[in-house]
Length: 450
Ligand code: SF4
Ligand code: SF4
Image 1 (tube, protein in one colour):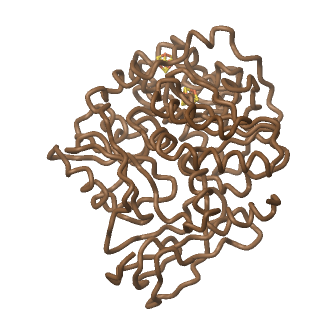
Image 2: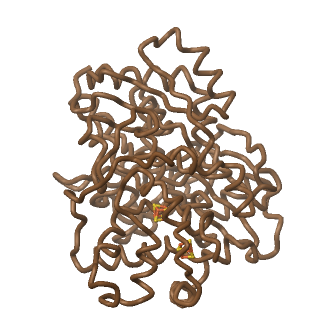
């Protein structure tokens, strides 16, 4: 297969990174990639999608990944998986004879191993420059469900209009399910037997990087998990707290112990992000500390992993939230990261400062929820979906249907924006378009068989 044909299929089927920011996958299919990595680190507590998919569909995913390696003419094709995912590792070993060129790299059970920059360093020993992209160093990283979606696209099993996600926390029976894109959170969690607390709060994504959402919020192509926790859980209290209170607390009790910087995974790789210096400058006011703006400008190199605030800080402060607020403020004023910023060699102490998953899970109060969440592959059913037009990085899709149109499962309802980094969107149910706005399309089920 030629690369342009593969790019065309992947784009037409709306394949975006199935997690994280949802980078349109066709844009990663680049012959500069000398090494391609399959990311099965899946490092946030309670999430299980990628390891389960790779265990169940090892052959299909390896077949597709090997094909991508051939099309890109990559020198190395590597599956990076945590050693702790025993069933997944066994499934890979059982299929390795079919794909002898695929290497398997076993990773330690630490967080944030799934961060692309950390993963690349751990697997290949290469450091991606601060603010840079893996392709600059000849690497492309794909996650497991993304490759599974390419597999389905190549086998004519349709476009991306459903998402695997783990339902965990305060639910009767945690599960990993396949939900139509656009299905409401409150409906999805019924698949896990319902909620077990009176005051539930819903977190979309993992406990480290997810966000609190309403029960009416909807599944997108990047939703990896829905966690249900009690409103009084400390993680929820942290997520719901006011950032202005975070700043006042930082002003009063940050003792400059540097633990946040000592354990920051990007700082440990030599990147110029120093959360303790940011906290010092932010709480003292710009100009009060040597007129040095670098702690603010270096916020661009934070990956928002949350180690500083959910694990490292002995004072329970929130460097990550404050850093994110500053970073967004700078972007809003048109400031962009310096791509030529200097960085150092990874710290020799890095190996001893990795954060074990078990301790992290305990520290954020989730040990009791770290249970089995079996994968159930049957597509959940719903009568209505609200499908967002921006589900990926880049320019949002442009609706091509109008109110009153009848659409079918898998039909294209929005086109990729012309000549931009963008993807089309497809219907996840049969039904009638009942509402279109600039941000979403609502489809009501016509009760035909999907
Ligand atoms: S770990 Fe907490 S107290 Fe220590 S320097 Fe960082 S923010 Fe301040
Ligand atoms: S969230 Fe904190 S620990 Fe993580 S990269 Fe940013 S500053 Fe470092």
